[in-house]
Structure formats: structure tokens, C-alpha cells
Amino acid sequence: MNETPTTPEHGGPPPSVPTREVAAVISRRRFLTRLSLSLAGVCAGVLGVPVVGFIAAPIFRKVAGVWRDVGALDDFKIGETVSVTFEDPSPLPWAGVTARAAAWLRRENERQFTAFSVHCTHLGCPVRWMPGANLFMCPCHGGVYYADGSVAAGPPPHPLFKYEVRVVDGRHVQVKADAIPITTTL
Image (cartoon, rainbow, N blue to C red; front, side, top):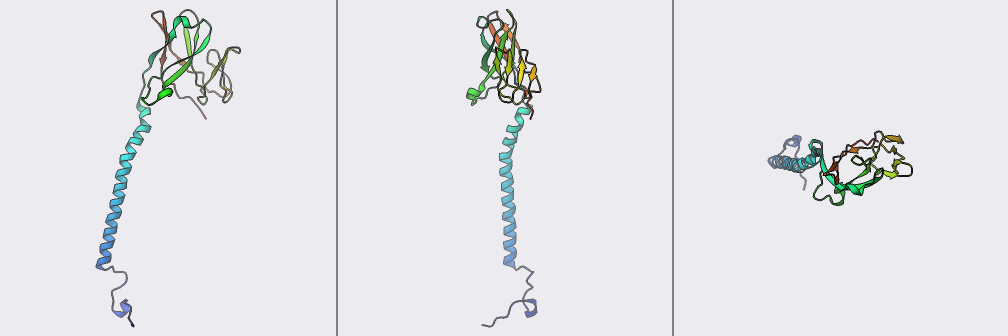
């Protein structure tokens, strides 16, 4: 049982030269590796394109403002600021309750209204109307706005977003539901 090793000194093939079977395994391995990487690339492309489209679509999609009824003209008292809700200008079928938007609506005189977004321009928190103080207040970070929507105190960088308001047929009040601009800062 005394076998001699197959090394170049003993007349065998050199260890660095692959045999035919080893070369077939290497080429099969290389083929399967390339096939696996190619299939993974195709799967990543098939899954990645819709994800990128989902992320990039809002950048290119412009939503036109839509006039939404918020109530009858007689429902609003002159000088009073009330909360009104309306449907978002671009509701998605699965949005549910989140397809509802809100605004603070004030009747200035017989035919003139002013509407402000309920979202603070600092981080988008909901602002409240404080009738006793005649101010809008953001409870999250202490943002305060005057009755005209301008910043009174706190971190908000911009005044409240104003919606366009109109009276239709002398009976119905409508708010133009626009996409609220993203003005939040960190």
C-alpha cells in the first residue's frame, strides 16, 4: 500500500493544471453563477421599475384644483371662523378617511370669505383656532399665527396656506381644493 504521490517529481501531472473533469466543473460553475446573477438582475429590474415609478410619479403629476362645496351661505356667520371639511383634490380609491381635507373658513362680510389650511407650515401639525385669543395655535411646537394667517411666534417659517373661496349662485360656499404645498422644515 505504498503509493507514490502524483507530483511533477514522480511523473504525474502538475497540480496547477486542471484535469478535464475539473475544467468541466469550473465552466459549469461559472455558467450557473452567471445565470444566477442574470436572473437576479432581471428580477431586480422587474421589481425595481414599479417602485421607482411609485416614488417618482408625484414629482411629475400636477393636480388641478377642484372647487368643493363646504356649505350654504347662511350657515356661516360674519366674523366667525369655523372648521370645514371637503374631499381632497386627488383622492385615491383606497384613501378612505384620509381623502378628506379641512380648512378654517372665516366669513369676512356678506360675500367675502377667507380659508386657511389646518396644517402648520413648520411640520404639518394641525392648527387650532382660538377664538378668545383671535389666533391659530399649533400644539406640537408652539407655532402661533395671527387671524390673517401670518406668523406671530414660534418656529413656522411661512404663513398658513390660503385656499381660494367663492360663493356660487348666491347660496353655496365653495373652496378650491388644491394640493397643499410642502413648506415644512426640520
